[in-house]
Amino acid sequence: MLKSRLTPLSALMRKHLLPVTQNVCPKATATSAKVDETDVKSFKDVPGPGGLYAIPVIGPAFLMKPFTNYTGHSFHLLLDSLHEKYGKTFRMQLLGECLVTEDPDAIATIHRHEGNYPRRAALNLFEVYAEKNDKERGMAVVNGPEWHRLRSATQKYMLKTTSASIYINEQVDVTNDLVTRMSTMSYTPEEFRNELFRYATESIGVVAFNKRLGFLDPKGTGVSPANQVYLNAIKSFFALLFEDVGPPVYKFFPTKLYKEFEKVANEAYGYGRVQIRELLEKVDRQMKGGTFDPEEPNLILQLQSQDDRQECGCHSVRFADGRNRLDCEEYGDSATQSRIESGQAAEVV
Image 1: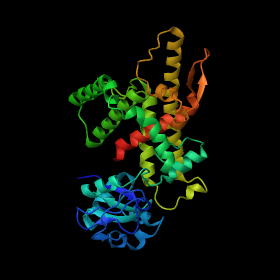
Image 2: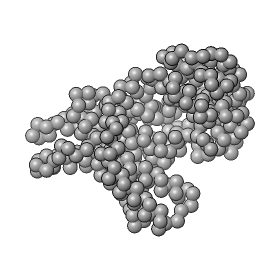
Image 3: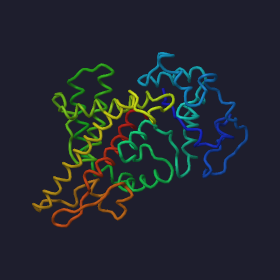
């Protein structure tokens, strides 16, 4: 079954949203190209949960436990049930008014007309955490020009046609370890899902930190205590985001949900900060010992070396010999955020 695409209504023009036929494009953002408005449904004509479920802010809470059997872990099953009831495309209150679709043509149309600044639903829990803990919000939560600024600073390296080939040998090693483990181990569905999560994390680490992190031992042994803390933290991080339904009262006082989220988010940030510090210390040693290879791919140093390094949320300080490096503390937050976003994509897209 296709995954649903959730689009905040604020990202689309409210007057015209979905075509009656597959060949008619909806009118979307103010910056989108001119489209055919023939036979277009108005938003009020799109089916979806009504009554209590349509009440702004609190409506989604009535779709979850204790009012139903659905939780953050089974949110995808809730969407499946709503698709069965209302069809491929429906509207609902979620993080604001949202349009939910599993129609490939509608998804393609939305992507084509998002404009320069695609808008994603706000992650209130994460934003409150970042504000209270003075953390960099990063690309996972910002929208508009700020998102575009951060995205532009990183994609010049990550979206080059040669980017994949630079890391191909390392990625092949990670994949071979996964295949070796799969050939010697048996899994339940949940265990295999966790295995793919380890695989995604290991693959990201090769690019972000230039090293293997140790999440996929080919002999099938477990991970280190620090890695296990990170795995538990990042899984809880995403699960708690999905449990965030109803009024965000944690903006005013720390609820149980917020306290749990703050704990696991701090653990995830801390893990990323350690990896950044170790990488910079290694580069420092190589520079002092004359073994540093400037041709070796290093995403963090690439970002720092550019004149636009302030655009990617990092600050520079100096080595003892006067050479620039990243401030480990400052960049640790942004780097972890990049990993969180990547992990989120692996989990829910």
